[in-house]
Length: 356
Ligand SMILES: Nc1ncnc2c1ncn2[C@@H]1O[C@H](COP(=O)(O)OP(=O)(O)O)[C@@H](O)[C@H]1O
Ligand SMILES: [Mg+2]
Image (tube, protein in one colour):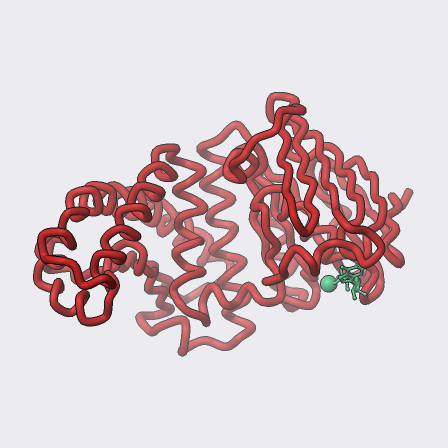
């Protein structure tokens, strides 16, 4: 079922929270500045080891504490996970054992978020779109993380050689490693996007009727050249800049609506709807290929979409095997009564109570 319980200590304005979640839908309601987004942020932190609000650790620790702690019981193999973080230290525990890698948490607790800045997935630079692909590839294909780490390591070494103006031979010493893992990353991303594209097609009939949405993987170097040839052709240019200018670390997704770039051709409102569609496509693919339940955090749904689209999205979400946390100012704003099961939580001045 995803997340069964959540215990929060000293995270933003949430001094002490204990809740037992519903396995399907959890509605978090409360007025402005009550702590709703912070609650979603704590769940996100448990999966990613960071915030989705570009915040630093010191912003996340409550003004009244010098550390925060998040603990959750999961359904996945009955696991219990926890993070404790002070300004100086971070401890991650899985079933009471200390672990070093945040990626172990992500594997146990897959989480996606849609929040008021999520339209940047479409409107901003390629970074967000690479993260979009890589979240999916990471959860589907366990060899991805290894190849990505090896690639980044080789890239760092090559860049250091370029920066220090070392010989051609030394600069190219890392090419073999770089090429090997670039190819694996490219193929995994290609496969993932192909599957996402098909689901996006189906979903767009409902959410963008009459329009054609397309996603094209831009692998980070020209289509007509192999990466090996491209790297040797570009050695002089790379030397000039002092770093490797192309490769999977510069990949992107070209998103078009009716053949035109979604970045420039559609309104902010449509971009928000498109982001929901893209995330739903990921959730659909995840549910189809995993026994685990993915969690969707949807911050301020009523403010993000008009009622008509909200209802469509709620209906699509209700048919997926996922666990959802949605925030809103009031539960009247959300059409949730037709859900199989749900819980409503009320947040006020950082206190969270289940509404019965
Ligand atoms: N480190 C912190 N310690 C205590 N309060 C904080 C901290 N960071 C933010 N806040 C406050 O927490 C409150 C809740 O914020 P937020 O979760 O964004 O509210 P909501 O989403 O319900 O509008 C805000 O008043 C904010 O100023
Ligand atoms: Mg908020």
